[in-house]
Image (cartoon, rainbow over all chains, first blue to last red; front, side, top):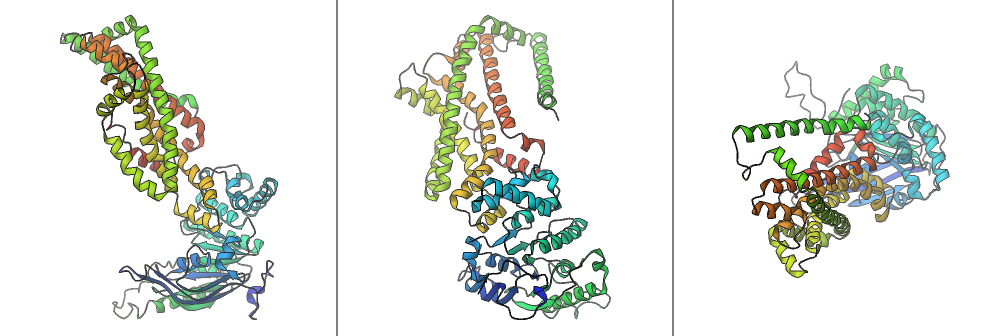
Length: 297
Length: 278
């Protein structure tokens, strides 16, 4: 299997079985505390293939193992069974080669480093020389439109700006894959929508494959080419919904009927995974609650 | 906020409260005609301080030097031990209870033992005592700073496939720096207290502690209080220097009162074991 570092903008819409799969998840299972009373079956038999250039969201009820799946792809934890291939390599080799960047719900910036030095951190660890690091940091600051803030300390920035720095850091070494665990989760609603638009722009510019964990249906629909719906513990993939709202998404997209149609589709898929929902037992005039831990807004 | 106004905010209110306290003290002593050997008036203490200034100054130098040497050695030993504890889990489990046990033994017990081990004119026992107390405070705080790295930072470093030494240099040590400063701020006045309390229990006949006890024993209460004033001055100097070093070394951390840093400071202070030992 070959590694492709350049992606055409429409590679995601090609349905041919290309060899450029960025991530292949093969019969993956994860059991925590196996054999002990507090055993947790986090994931069972996960099969997933992510094409290069894809923007894929993982959505599901709280505790369905979506973050666990992301950490397995990142090789931050080892699976109980099954395999993960990233760019045709084992997940561990991909981690050692720094083939992916990662962003978390907390920006995880280092308080004692300037914004610029935070972005340079992965490059320092890769052994880049100072001139090269500085040049790339400037490029990344430019990309996330924070060129004036390179010398600031992280806590002098707003939450949304901090997340943009974290994304710039994740993309600094030009990894072909970006793994994100609810990077907009801690942001204010308006900031979050702005951030999502930024994210689309940044990822398109960097031509990166993205795996995105979220608990917000509109966020998943707005950002993704495909939304993977997962069931409650033990986590399974129950639906994969193609979204494709087009490359020219903007604020109007959020008011588009296709946007609402896809939101409904994902929501119904989530209702199904919650099992025979509470709809039947609720009084007539009560609105049935959505699945646990899922935001409709 | 300018440096001058920052210092003003810290210094002025306690000065006012202290001035009021001394004023009330002066009035109460005269009003109720309290005998000088029980409680001398502040004016009498001031006179005694002027009369005995060269002796008090010499005592301040002796105690100050002991506290300083012990403080520096204690910081070195404490930091070194905290690195060993972080590196070896076994050492952590062995040394921590030992350090706590050692720290729980009062000065009154250890100092005479140390005095017996060394010549009667040396300052070594007192300096060892200060070193022991200070190193414990530094050890507890710095070990915590080295260990308690945020989960996100650790995941991030692992995602970069960072080596343990890279994690140490780029994450653990910078994370521990504020903890070290907090420890030094706590330990600086404790070092002075330990140094002069150690003088209560024998050894050389010098220092503030000796001045306090010998004058008190001779019913020269005002002179005894003059040495107490000297002890306050030395303790305050140590504390202010520690605070100044912290501000100088990390001015940024104090410019913005982030919830995170104030939280960690409180946690570190909560561990202050110094007060119970002096």
